[in-house]
Length: 257
Image 1 (tube, one colour):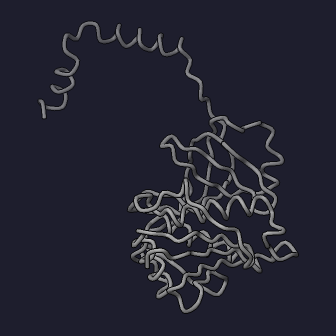
Image 2 (cartoon, rainbow, N blue to C red):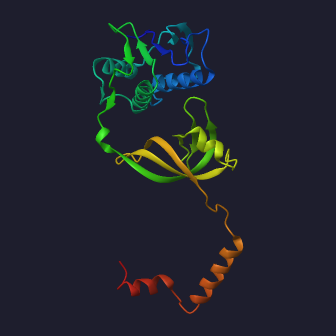
């Protein structure tokens, strides 16, 4: 299957017009292009998408690769998706893209995604009628929790969200609503914030997904150096007569472990 072209298409009529190369909302174009890049690249070991050339073609709005060579895992994943909606063997990043598309297709009327390849007898379609799902679905539980991170982007007209860069370096996309953002009187862009969210949490991988913002939580991020110095002095005074603090603690515990 070397030298095969892959076509990924966005079919969207939710805006009152059919998306095409002649007319597409900028936000949709950016998200779709990023999703296609992530899907084709997968875990990044097989295909370098930085220099990948594509064509923009009709159908409704579609990106078609030039012939791809040496990507057996991509072709294998495509066949697996074509044969079954249970995503038990495909690359994790490709699985995440399909999950996002499945959720979006169920939420937005007139939205679907199609993947075509010469070795398919029919396009692979993600729509409101499809049911692509992960085999690890029972590992996901709904939780409410606090997360801290830098707000890198906030807003959106159709599906408002905030992009939060976590301390790990990962970016968590948190859905919100216009009213919450509109009434927030603090400019949080490019600043660290504490958020209370509701999300799905994977008990195996500790990954969060489908997060929704419940509210911002005010907290003091600054450290009072004078308070730290004062507590350090008090601690040093309290422990000045103890020659070996570690040995003293071990003795209280009943001996070293």
